[in-house]
Length: 534
Image 1: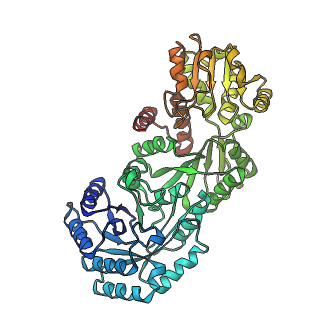
Image 2: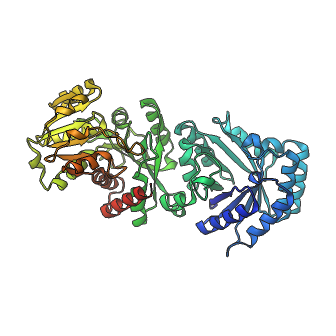
């Protein structure tokens, strides 16, 4: 069964609906959902006209789902049950291939009978019986699925619920995996985003995408352009290997863009996802255990970023994984490779390495970004006075790297205790942020998220601290030119952008994920293109 990419047509009148139909067809929609509950002054005649227009539009006639949603289950206009049933009956007579009706309302005899009769007169058409929960998970989604099929065995069940955490998605994945018939199952909201993207891998009957951000009909709905270009939906199948960036927040991350671009260039059957994992160590561990227990999902590798780098290290330790000595020394992991053919505490058949492997690619990525910009070898950093702002996961990697090459480091952090703890580990100095005014460094490195999109008008370092004989390195890559770097250039200092480090660590991760080299130029171009749009 081939999952179809359905685009909702959510218009207030027929003229707007026709424009949306044209746009959806042009963008590559494979199926159209006519959300007639959006139409003002809805009538049966209006629906007939709209279906007739769709049937005559475009070179290829697209199948149609007609929906007139009950307002209590996400409908826009408060139309009565009788009119909504009349609209669906009319849609079947006008040639719609599918109608979508609420399961709860289908149980009412006066609604069920006319729909059943209309279906019997159009045996090619199909009924979708839907259930939505806009607050949380269903109490028992498997039972609800069985109940719908018991009431109407020939229907296509559609079960959609709000995911309040990414771990809520696994019940939807399990239902899709365990039931091979035609069904539509996914989760709403940012935490449920991946359920929409991998619907094709799990053979959901359809997945939904909007024409643009303004015409989305549900929380977490992607645009058709994002589906097809960013997430390569045309290439996804049941054998697709999955990767992703685990972060909170994750929406700003360009990791999906650079990795998917390189997968596409090499025609690899791989897909890289944004994985919003909220909470701390417990939620992080739960997510990875959920993934590992479901080897049929075929997750292979993860990029790890704020705030989970230390949780990733602890997870690898606790589950018998291999931790590279460098990551152990840094105390933070930004890359997990997870070959899930066996439990994480087992050894692969070759006996060479554990299933779970943890690395830190920030260390070399940062040093290479610094030395390439300054035109020196790593030995040239020996004795250099460096101010590191921040004491989190990125700071740990950069301090470890600079410490290894003999730089003279002072760590500045809002919470002085964190700076002191990191300084003791790597035998360097520390100070509160207020002391930045008195710093005498030749290299300033921002390892905080200050200045990151969308808060682009902030800087972690006072402008008057920046001097012409300095080099300033901002590990933030979105935007490529942060306020800190702009101010550094105004002061006559050399600037090192976070894009360089981001590409370097991305290339190292790509090699760990795929055992092949990524394309540095393609990664940088992809980042620049994405940032120019944003």
